[in-house]
Amino acid sequence: MELRINRRALVGLGVAAALTASSFALLRTDSGTASSHREAPMIAGDPRNDNTDVYAFVSPDKADTVTLLSNWIPFQEPQGGPNFYTFDTKSRYNIKIDNDGDAKPDIVYQWTFRDEDRRGNDTFLYNNGPVTSLHDENLLFRQRYTLKRLTENGSRTLVSNGIVAPSNVGPASMPDYGTLRAQSLKSLPHGGKAYAGQSDEAFFLDLRVFDLLYGGNLTEVGQDTTKGYNVSTLAVQVPASDLALKGDVRRNPVIGVWSTTDKWSPNGYAQVSRLGNPLVNEVVVPAGLKDAFNSLPPHKDADIPQVVKRVTDPEVARLLEGIYGIKAPATPRGDLVEIFLTGIAKGNGPIKADLNSQTLNKDAGKLRPSEMLRLNMAVPPSKDPNRLGVLAGDLQGFPNGRRLSDDVVDISLQAVAGAALSGKLVPGLTDKVDQNDKPFFQSFPYIPLPSNVAVNKR
Image (cartoon, rainbow, N blue to C red):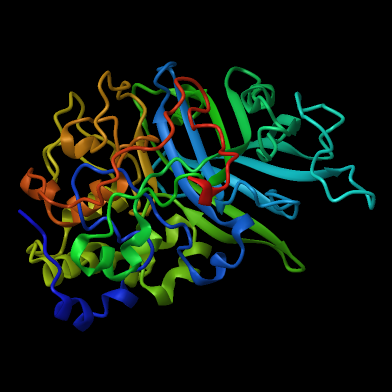
């Protein structure tokens, strides 16, 4: 099925204004894409506190562990000096885990930061010579962090004086950035690892969607417009038993994961950014609710009719039908409720997962519908991962958690178009960008090293 743009319908529906960041993958079933990250008006002006993507997956090289990774500070130009990119020292950065289904955090991994600035008033430089280690005297600016694990029983410090891997200034300044990253990895008590530092923007997509949906005639496709940009990553790899309810992965394998930023003000800390499933705030939540959604905890989602209605009757499905003639499935959309609000059950829901258990990632406990990324930690890593995840029969892929290689936009758009209901992918939806420009690593933290060449030189 070839998709053709109806220019009159495009203008009539106000698509140029109505499609918010990330509803851009109206063009393929097998591409890999991402959000533009500027999902809400207020956080778009505060990039240091803007969390861009969340990942949760069973570690492919250590199947008894889970990797939780979240990125902040979008669209980092490698030559963005002289101050480059830092975490906000007045904020708390969190990755939160719900392991009993009530949409409230049972475990929180929380990072806070402090600056170590040796530049004084004598130089503008970030470094005054080649940096060969994190402790090199040539590195004139460092950030250090504290990582805590918070539960209802109190807090435990996992890392007390960690060093953030610096911004990748360039090949003369940092001739071996891989060594700097390796030195920044911290071992955690009782097993596990932590990382804080710059990384490659690992999503691949054509952002020219904002030019009337790829030029209005699908000619503006095939260009990875995030290639060369960087982000700032916070990640932990911990035993799955550390995350499961009562430590029992076999009986309680499902967790919910989301990340937040708490920013300090004279009135105390306030949540200013939130991210779980990709695309929800960008595409599902309407513009008038975006800032409020960023401040909400997941357990309040079910109390907001506009949020639930946008899942059961999604705007994007109507746009797909009006522009491309892809008939919108009947509402209310129980399949999307499973994907975004409850997790996916076996057999008794719209999505039929071929599992030995009764659920893919729907918690059997005191479930409260809420938007978060859900992961069944008992599903082993795929030997041959499929970037379309569950829709292609790869049960370890999105929306069962999220791996770096999952094509989350294509998966979401296919689901909105009804693929989870019909069991068939809609052909012809593609932006013709199929993979990241850098390969993923085979060990923690998996995400590629940051770029150090100017974006406009690619």
